[in-house]
Length: 215
Image 1 (tube, rainbow, N blue to C red):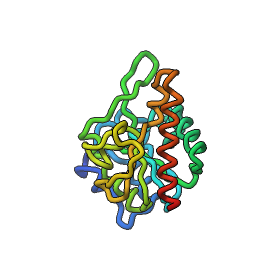
Image 2: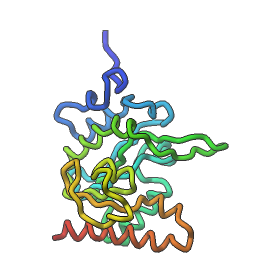
Image 3: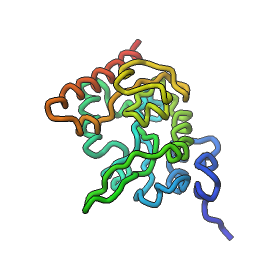
Image 4: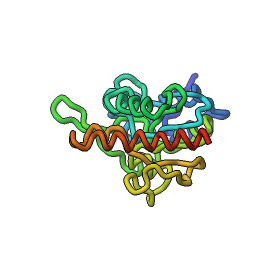
């Protein structure tokens, strides 16, 4: 009698779901059944990372948003459009990078007909960590750009801060050099008079990552 694949809850964590000799397609397939934290109950689907298999630059955000949850791809909603614009202004092709999130399911609460983003808790981030670590192991980026505070804490550590350390190349707890910067959604939330300055910060930080790779 055939058995259903183990979920994260059944196996005790996402680490047990990482396949031997992982590849991105194998990881994406395995992550689709992950139940390592309760967010699978509210997210429509796992939204795994995408991009160049051996990208020198990896962009890590917090979690998929509403549009990403519907479409199943990272950074395809309003924040994704801001990111695409920032990459273009920084002279970086999105096709040349790998884009993912710390948490692979959308965490939200209802407000009328809308689904409002909620910040993932530490235990949810920890439960999902093996997926990001496995992605890093396959892609082997030289630089990680951490988009927003959740990614900064997960990749660099709790002492780093987005505004204090943005644009700085720092050591990371996961191996590669990492840089904090704004999450594109922060630009969308900024007051209109501050939006261009925030966008300029993101573009400048991405440019520093580009220059590091060029050097």
